[in-house]
Image (cartoon, each protein chain N blue to C red):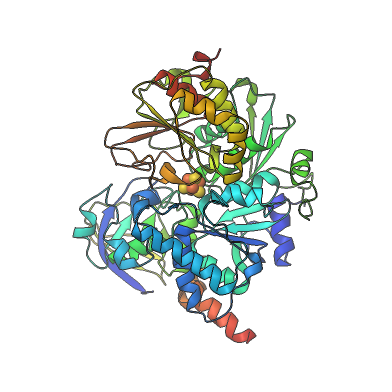
Length: 165
Length: 413
Ligand code: SF4
């Protein structure tokens, strides 16, 4: 997980569901690279082609609504998205993001499509370099932060297993 | 301070006093994984080089079975091979299972007081029998296979009080659509819904309500268990029912008059976009009766009652998908298939099928489908320009006959 993330904003509305992020017909692999080819395919067909590594998604309320498919997080990671900022997240998407070290950042901010954003995790702030304003985001719980710093849920499991061996 | 059902179950399984907002690590009773979420879970798990806790694990292929193409066949094979390699006894092969959530209930994995997770968002269905049950991701499933436990944020609980008795043709589907229409698709975000009703709702209606609670964002959706649950489970399984304390703390309390509710439809693209079925009046191309939401025997009987002596409209195809092999056999023995076939419906074996736009009923651009499933998102059942309208089995059957979405009374007053 990067401490500072920088990229241009892709704006999305409220209730972006996981069927939109990755349609069910592609749920035949867990590979982020494969999945990323079809990310937002029905919803914003240009996304997979035009996304640049580091870009940031800015959603509205309830981002990641719907199915438990971790494929949604994997597809975004595979596409090179550095993080999602949203007013709120659906809970399974939120959990999957924490467990895979893909920071789900809760913030209600002003942003236009294409604005250059910089997210500083340790300081808890998002800078919109286009309008010069700073936005504090809801701090992560100590648990979520330590899980992401560790490298995600599987690293945690490895640690626990090696202690009990 | 008293505690809710969610708080009690999470306290019991974590050995800690579970207070809303806390993170606890809790031991799960069962972990369910399906063919779609299974593959990434198995891949993650294999990296750990340990043996899975197979007694807790239930594997159910249902999303893309019978295999619809070569990639889905490979995925189903990965599950079968995992089951064989580790001797997972709770693996339900095609022809011996059905849709995961229905199978979990039928086979006795679901019982009051249990903590159950599943790599599928509709795992919250099991709260209908008094479990704390919630959906998780594939990596989490891998973690549980290795450790038997997982982290949970203890949710606040909301109390839903259902008053009065529902009118004819108003069932669990209409009740939950009314609730979601009222509180919105994030009205229960991160929370546990707890339902109370003096009218003892039939179990299948509770199952439908708990199933769709995730469409309001809920983490869990629990009915305190009663005789209906105890009778259903008989002596098949051992369990310890958990009830809320009278002074338990709820973040919100809602009251709904069941007697005021009418058959309801959720128009696309969200389950909260509700209108009375009688005002919908949308012409349809397809009607779909099935899924973990409404593919039970009671749902099929209700549809048969309406279809009996009627024909499916000439411009409509009605697709009927019993939720499990057991339901399929029962419907056949009860003579429901005859009624369906006579009316011009297509009957499929149990599968998730077109519920998630997988196969067997996928929609073309511009097509409209009235469906007993749980999601009407953009492109959920097919092309991005197709539309899904959510409704009860009675409404779907009546609409199939009329060729447009109608209140069931229009066909059988
Ligand atoms: S029937 Fe539909 S909602 Fe239920 S588990 Fe299958 S795909 Fe999911």
